[in-house]
Length: 84
Image (tube, rainbow, N blue to C red; front, top):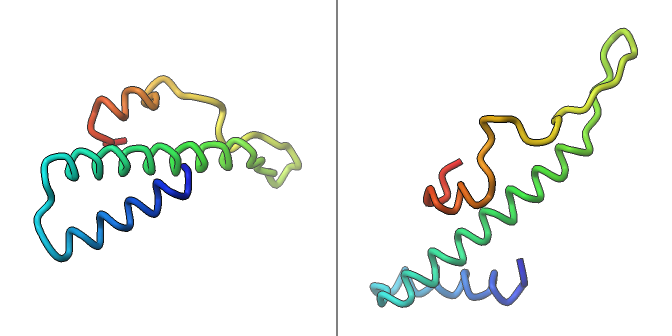
């Protein structure tokens, strides 16, 4: 996520502490929050895909084997209001 978007999200947070949002600010904040969530989830997934677990017997296996059948795609998360 671009730094200017994070800065804008912080600005909106500060605004929310002093007054009510306009409708356009509410929509902008929700859009920025969703983009932030997706960036965090993407980063976490990428990190977990790099983790290898070594068992006591010496065998190695990935901590995460790609997308499981019950894992939501980013589009499904967006359509579900950000709930994972």
